[in-house]
Length: 467
Image (tube, rainbow, N blue to C red; front, side, top):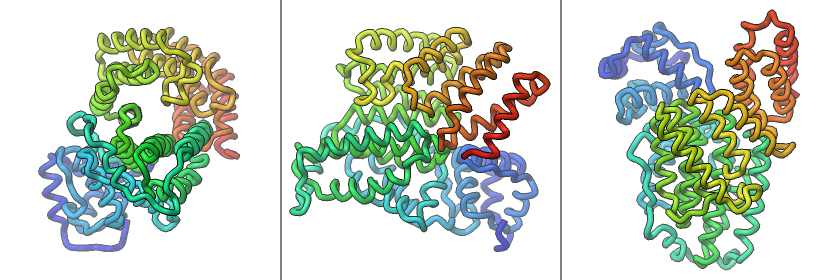
């Protein structure tokens, strides 16, 4: 806690009164938000008493306090309303959020937003302001997104073509190769090759987008950039940098809208739904998944509709809507039967591979209480994965192990978790780190059993020597 002290904080006291919170309630909510954003905090009522007396916590904690009140009061609570002075975060980051909120009307220059965001992220002195930013629930807790429609992409024809880089027919193809490369790099975890992707966007992609060109060449380039930014958002999700992931998801949405690419727009919304689900925002996740399916064109191919239905079924199961979840799974099965070649669909539409669809189906069935069917689906997912898909394999094995533990099948669970550790050794993943720590804690109650003792020893060794 900073030594900076001021007069009693009446603004914070007024917010506490409006929220109907005790000191303990505020501390508990700030700690929970810290955990959501990858921080382990232990504030208590004494901490809040100090804040009310005039102590000013560190800048990131102020961001969390503002977000806690925003969620409770269901209205934006700016940092200035806390009575703690301004956050150390520069106006540029607040400007990014405001810029993104205006983006759905089609008037925002998506490329400019991406340039500012990547510029901060590529700068060693400022990247922490992006990477440590807080996930803002109110950004997604609004009416269901709608397709901007109509004039999306019209601004591209207005961009003057640069003499040095007028745009070439092969530009989008080259960018697509980069998207494929970084998507495969994500199989090693969200920290693997992420800084290289940020630099590539900042140094190569953004200048090409700024150069403009004829719509016939520029719009495909813009759409591919949206898909590449979507990959970067997924890397941040995996590294539990949730504020950064949210900002890049929004940038990808705006790029897709400006490109007039409904499919990518829907795919990004589906990913945002999955992200919200990971963070416990169940109703938001359902709303985003419903919007994704509604925005996808009615005649969209099965490769597009199948992953959207898979996410919708999962979101419906999470909120306890068993009937609709089963109906969505039935529709998913019909779409899968109509897919031309599920083995190659993933390259065109992320999440449409047999492995990804089976994984979401398994997670949905687990939530619906059918453990046996869930384990079968998850194992089928593993069978479809490549040998180097370490991250999805690790996450799937962790899901299977938890289901086996719930069934009391301790030896099978331990064998599965040894395979999880085999995958984990290849990863640079905040999500996998958390899963390992959580599983280690859950297994402690079975420490008297020999298979668990052996597994715990290996887990401890892996944590001590991650390399």
